[in-house]
Length: 399
Image (cartoon, rainbow, N blue to C red; front, top):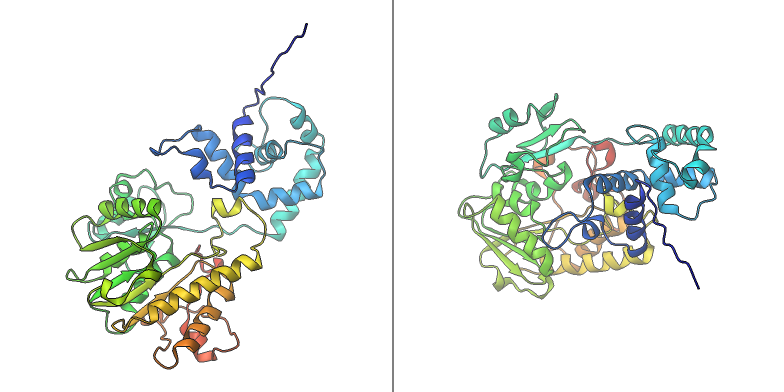
């Protein structure tokens, strides 16, 4: 005879620990693991928020764990409980359990290490940015709409119609955001479309190509900046991302501006696919090393693999050279959310070398007051480097 009993953990933190473990093991995003195909949350809101907080603070927690050894096999549960004790809103762990007892034995030491980590690596807090979708809304109306959400609010000095708000204000559930009147978009993300249209004293006229368009924030910004008569060709090769692009364009642009969405790999296109195109916005896949608060990026705390970065840089160079091969194009903006020279200055240098004297770098007129410029690399003159725009966490931008 045999007696078997299954005992399940009743810890209030078990669901968060299980989700965190899945993220680490599968390398999938928290969104893909937490939402079903209909967009409904499969876990509780508190579990989702808990895991987001742990991932946001993962590097600090990792430092604490590596300094103060706690003999615990359930690493994900350990991280969740440490977050609750050291960084959570209540600074305590609910319930009991073996892991809690192990942690509480070293509470004083853990808090001491946390204080040192905070002193050595002060956390950068970014303001919230909200771009007014001027196709549907007026900036004055948006300012009035958002005043109740933030004690401090002003128009950004570099990007027209971009509002800067306090870091902790809650905007996602506002009717003006859900209706597409206001777009939650980081400041540096707005530079691409702005530079394409207003990079010279004379704004670009004609049709434009967004070569890697999904999810569509930059595409909708282009639509707001271009004349009514201009068409935007928005390309993406990924079918799932294309669906998101279509949804976003329906919400943010509708029939106000002509947008032709193409399910296509830009590298397979030719100039005749885009009648009367004069500009290309090229924001290809990159390492994302400049997205300092990306939850999905923080899920994998390992430094970017050099082989992966070089693979991305090779792709970026190929797609930039393809864009430069279009005879009718007058202006190209190449942008990434990476901080690596390999994906930025070195790609630009090699593309210019391959195209001879046909193309030249131009310092964006619209960002003439922006101080941070490109890094000096072999093959680019200092004057060419000054034509390039960089944004870093010290500029209160993310990505």
